[in-house]
Length: 204
Image (cartoon, rainbow, N blue to C red; front, side):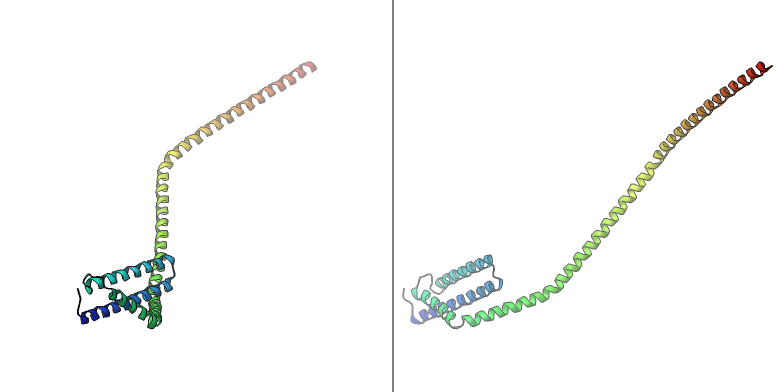
């Protein structure tokens, strides 16, 4: 179905604008890739720009072309992207990179107090943890001391009984030693008296 000339001109202008928009998106993702420079992120940017390109072209075909595939729509979109890359791509890429640098500086300045707060909070958490551990240790020592104090009387009584038994044994052993010494002295004295008595009778 043929369309009027002004409708076709309108479709061509919209297709040119779509190509120009594709160039803008490509430079924006290119600036992101140059800023971060990571393989996974670059792959994500390439996939995103391809998705937006096909989505934009499909939208132009469905809205402007009324679901019909027109060669001039594709040609005008490609020519719009080509004009963008030839004329304004470098300047726009520099603007995007400068904008991303400015955003990075702003986020860095905003992140400084957050980093300080996180460091201070980490130190405070460490101190609280240390105090809590010390309190737990003191409480354990206190509980163990109370349990030991309760258990000490029985142990002390046992030790007292043991010491008493040992003292009794030592007393008995001392008494035995005394008796044996006394017996030895008596025997030695009796032998001496017998010897002196015998000598006196012989002289008489």
